[in-house]
Image (cartoon, rainbow, N blue to C red; front, side, top):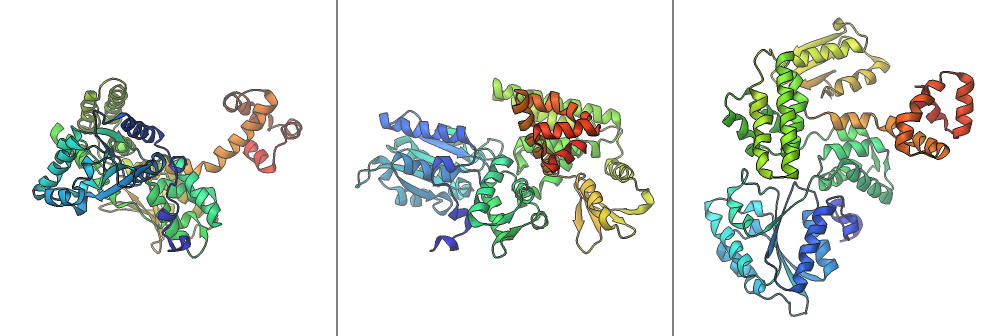
Length: 473
């Protein structure tokens, strides 16, 4: 098939380790383990790669196999679920580390989550037996292997090194999308590409698929196109999950959410933090809830640096600690935030009709807003709102996704102007860009209140017109 007709996720998949977005530490750990086989069969004969979809797990195996000269035998574990099928497929391959062509063999079991249920225990046991006797490296791949999520993997976890692949950082996704856009000559400004990167939630493959969905055939990408994509399926269950945490009456009920989450505990923490002021609208409750989250954050940092056994205290604080903070709240936090946002925009409350629904609030202007629509839309988007096409209003959910990344998009222009000006100041003043931002630029902005000083500073720094506007703004 011609490269032009391939799906973009296939066409632009990594060809070398340099092409893999982020997760350098995980890739290097996998590389070192594979290189260890050059000295003979190591103590750990298998590794278990785990992490969310689209983070480069399978691509890393393919790239390293090519770079290190392995002959890759890839098995989709969900297609070979029983011991008999596993033994028929692998046969003696696991005990022969060299192929008939003289290349070293590497065995990959992908999509391990597909091996599930009582009827498949033979498949798990067969893989465990293969690991015990293999003369070739074995790699297992799944999205999650934590004990709370999947007890079936225990026989394999005990025999394999766990290597975690984390969600790809937003700016790394943006860099990859920009590279694809340049190669395909797409018309795409930074804002929609950042929106795509945020929408994919660390899943690079999904970001590329989404880019293809909205750009193929028309060659242009806009923020409106990205907003029309909707949220990922795995987020559908998260608001209900967060609601269960806030409504829990016992620690067991609150902790149960950890094992049911479709997102990692760090993102769940962000969800709880974002929605805390909406649910705990009493200052006493909010203070207690924030105190519980701060303890959870401390335990999480200490768990990373010392012992992961401390994670249980983090989970207790971020779920049960938050749930038990609710004593005086009435659950009016969303309405109060909406009214405060409208007042801050300079509108009377009578300028909008608000209506509470089972899922959140509807906010509709009583008359055509003209050029002011964009300003209002941007403010309500900060509360998690989406514009209802054809509905002439905004829908704001009671429990909303973390908005920090969307706020990051909205400050894209300002941040990049700041960086550009800081680079020029750093050269002229012989200081770092960081010092320019914190110590010099605040003074320059004050200087721009004076016309004469502003003109002299503009000439001295060689500023562009848009940079001058930013300093004045």
